[in-house]
Each structure stands twice: as structure tokens, then as C-alpha cells.
Length: 99
Image (cartoon, rainbow, N blue to C red; front, side, top):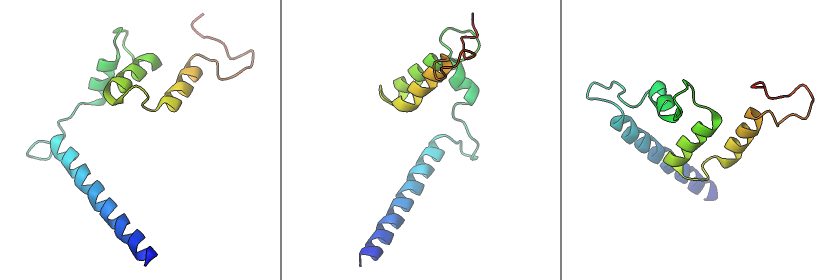
């Protein structure tokens, strides 16, 4: 009985996920099924607030937090920031390349 309940709940979860994916897909496609949502380039341009041609870690973090909330993927973004600053490795050859 417990196994049947787990399978039933799994099936409902899959159907719900598929339905939600179809809703999002319908929102991001036109009547011919062509994708009309934002491109990667569009999103990067929105992230590049200092208009230097690329989105750095701080700009990506600000963009994602604006869209998804303050603590969105905090652990991942914290580690990414540490790695970008060159502080993730304690060796003497890991230095800031900007200097």
C-alpha cells in the first residue's frame, strides 16, 4: 500500500511538472511555436550595468537576486565570488590578475 501511494504521488508530481512546463513554454512561444522569450544576449545586456561588455559576478548576482529574491542560490554565488576574487586558493601563484 505504501509503495502504491508513493508511485501515485510521483505520477501526480510528474503530471503537475509537465503542465507547468507547458504553461511556461506557451508563454515563451508564439502561435507557431517559435521561442519569443529573452535571449542569453538580452539577459547579459541587462546584467551589464556598467556597460563594459560583460557581466561580472557582482552584476550577475544582483540580477539574479532582483529576479528571484535576496538569498537566491546564496551558497553558489558566494563560492563563485570567492573564486572570482582569487581568494579560493591559498597558494602564492593565485593572485589578482588585474594588477
